[in-house]
Length: 359
Length: 273
Image (cartoon, rainbow over all chains, first blue to last red; front, side, top):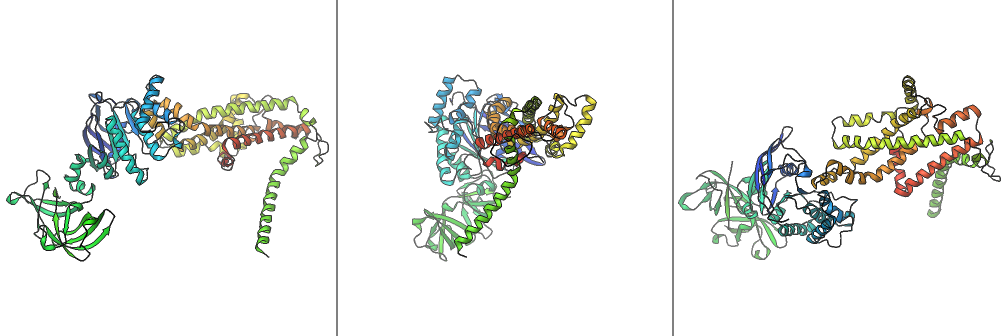
């Protein structure tokens, strides 16, 4: 709870196999004290395996885990001082909310008065004052989730782990709870590792995101880094919607550009560092960064034909067949739709084009 | 025929059908209970002269046998559950590779005809001097209780997600605390039901104990059987049989009241294989 005590967490060269399946391959990572870090990736990418190894519910083949200077991966789960929020919460059904939250304090032999005080603090933190006497079954899914968080935070763990804690909530509640969780974490400055396969959750909640794929780290960065400048094709495709066009890097005349096979050149705003002139790249343009002009001659990017339009309320998806860049999807505010219809020729402008290496 | 009338006759047909089944099932029991209050050897439907004389004439050796049966039933039940819980925990949570094989093997005593087990036990007990002893009877009964106990506790543990224990451990509980503070309270209602079912099944065990019982270690079912073979049906035998029925009814009432009648319908897990 108190930031001055908080210790950074270091994962060093973690390796884990299940039979012949390599679940984690030489994973190393530094987690700053007080940070909200998210492991994001598709199922089987190793994010849950990492969480279980840190919590002590799985044993790694090799590698170490440190809290500050103290090595903790040799300790049993009960002595690691980690708060774990399970996917299904695992609240003790025979105990009240108060007893659930106090459990970790009880195990640490806190005096009863201090336990009661801390439980009230926690109930206030998760906005469940007056619910302390209830049994978990008398709470809604979202409330149970907050009790699980309070229970994991109560004993001032060095690290809190959240294992896809929103996946059991319905869509509307999920949106609420993820902001809740984010605020609770911002208030408590509790070092937190969150595991999810949902990129929106990751973008909304995290200080930093660790994008994982096939047991390895694909990219580490702030949500904005990952969204605006993905480092790999996987990152570009996994986080957010994207248009990927195969091209070659053209570093001529001082301004980076992407040159397609049909010899269309598009200026690039950002490029993954270290790429040489002429290498194969994917040119990445987010749908919201494709601007459409009703007059095809007025555009400085490329021309296209509108294939289909899907109205979704605030925005409209526009499927385009471009001249030289293949099929593209644009997303634009519904009010900027005037004068565009399927079959029409339009002009395209790319507001922010990015390049990642293509293998 | 009008539709209402058709429905009436259909319902009547089903009512008669069910009533016939219930009568067939309960008639012998009702007859025994009735005759236990008539105090005579002949079984009649005469209800004009009901009395308790048969109950008063129950001999001490019956009461001793009943008391003996209750004693070993209770001890066997408690011992079986004490052994079963850790064993089932190891089997379910330890993810033993031989688990499926093991959990079927331990059921063998319960699925082999008990009379055959009884013969086997007699052969064994004669060698080691356990025949006709209190301990011998208890051990025999324990084999059945254990088979049932393991089946119950295994099912109970399977129904409890491991996350509860893991959550307790991540919060600082050691294995023993997780077991005692989390697992046991969650299993308690199930264990109580298991205990009731094992106890009542112990109370009526007959074939298994028939060969190995003796004058000083004779469960009530065996005692009644031998007496009836020797002397024919006496009114006090009928009275003791009725007492066994009361115990069974009391047991079912307890289960129905604590867990709801629904549980009884699903209770065939406790039936002998």
